[in-house]
Amino acid sequence: MSEPRWYRSLYWRIGLGLLAFMALMLVAQGTLFLWTTERIAGSMPASSPQRLADLVASDISTALADDPALNLDGYVNEHYGNVFQAFVVLMRDGRTVANHGDVPDAVRAELRADAERRWMFQVMRLRGRGFGRAGLPPDADPAPPGPDRPQPLFPGFEPPPGGRGRRGGPIRVAVARGNAAPIIVGASFVGDVVVLPGGPPFSRVARELGPIMGVVGGSVLAIGAALIAFVVFGPVRRRLRAVQDATEQLGKGDLAARAPEHGGDEVAALARSFNQMAAELRIRAEKLQVSDRVRRQLLADVSHELNTPLTAMRGYIETLSMPDLALDPPTRQRYVNIVMEETHRLERIIGDLLDLARLEGGGTAIRQSRVEVAALFQRVAARHERDLQARRIELVQQVDSQASTVVGDPDRLEQAIQNLAANALRHTPEGGTITVSAERVGGDIRISVSDSGSGIAPEQLPQIFDRFYKGDASRKSAGGSGLGLSIVKAIVERHGGTITARNDEGAVFEILLPASDT
Image (cartoon, rainbow, N blue to C red; front, side):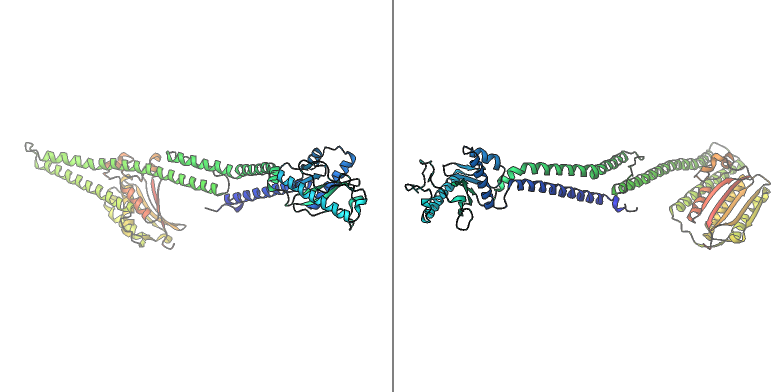
């Protein structure tokens, strides 16, 4: 059986389906990555924590300059609630605002303490540089406020305009817990923005993007699985189910069950193999039925053929053995002759049965030698010479020059032609003609035996070579065993030939044997 083309192979379809699914997954992941990157970029307005601190401090400074009574908590949550990086706004008036509520209170308190110390350090440094005369009250207390002192620290302190230091940049102090930037309103320093170090926590990113990514990934997985199931495994499953159904029907005895063979993949090859097996099983089943029918018929025919002479023999022997029955010598001798004839007939039937069994079973060796066809015909004519003369039947022999020899067993070939000649002699009327001929037909030698009798009835031609078949009364009355033509057929087939029967102004039997030069 030829292999399916590669593009129709089930394995290739599964492989290509998986590749397509992987490509779909990659496209979906790429799209999701770009979308997530855009979301993250929108949630990270600055490229570094320090730039984020500067940006938020500048934004809050502007908002406080526009609205001194600004709700700082609401403003930070509204504008920076979607920023993944956590930061804390520390105002000098005591307010502490974070953009995420998950910043612990302890961290906020520690950041507040660090800011108070940093502010005190800045004030002391500015005093040392003479900035105390620029608006710093002489009674200012540098001590940081405690829990009971939420009032602003150094309410009269004002840094230099623009909050610039020696190098012209904003006054920044690196904090141990993050990057800080001052919040300056006008010329006043009002607080700090401290960005917590370490980047946004993974839990926060997962909490924000996890549900969306899970939904998208699950949808892509479900769609890909559905496509593979629908395109690849769905048709395969239906066709395999059809093969399974056909197998179950065949197992239940339905020899006509067949599986659909459409498609060019391994499932179609499996279906074709199953159908071939089913067809062969059906042929074998039919042959077994025929063989069983023939066997039964053979048993019946053998029983009938053997019972006829045995019944006759038993009847005459019982008659001869009656002590009270007085038979004259001629009558007794006639009964004895009948018993002997029936005995010979029984022997012929048994001999023909054994001969046919050996031929059909291959138990008889067939010799291979060159046989002269003309000599074969002459021996047949010599054997039937007395009957031919008694009934004034002419036996015509015709041998073509290209059909002078055949290869086979001379004894078996002579037996076959003798049986055909005897059969023709029984069916040829007195004064008729029997013709035996041999001619070359392609690569075969055709041997024909024909007679000028009434021929064979058309309905009997298909059964003419069956065992014990006697198609007309003339054959029944001739005392034949009904096995002659069956033996002829077995001999011819053992020689690799064929035999046929037809009508052409009488019965014609034709044997085709391989020529000796082939």
